[in-house]
Image 1 (cartoon, rainbow, N blue to C red):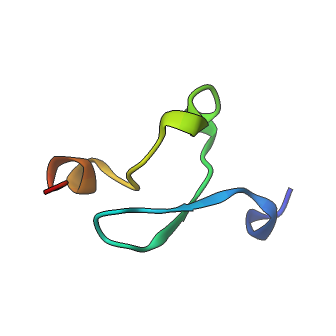
Image 2 (image 1 turned 180 degrees about the vertical axis):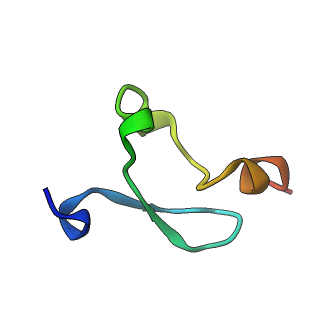
Image 3 (image 1 turned 120 degrees about the vertical axis):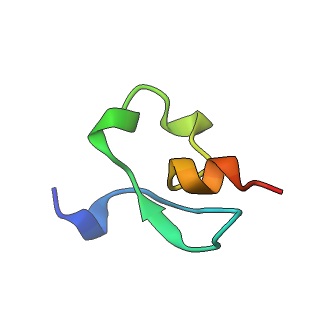
Amino acid sequence: MKKSDLPQKICPVCERPFSWRKKWEKDWEQVRYCSDKCRKNKK
């Protein structure tokens, strides 16, 4: 599967798109932030 075919979401903190990753396979629906840095700065 090409990277362009993977699902994407927009990070609410940095407002940049991020793509599905293998480590998020089981909980993709709950993923909100693109990184730990954004998750910690979610003001």
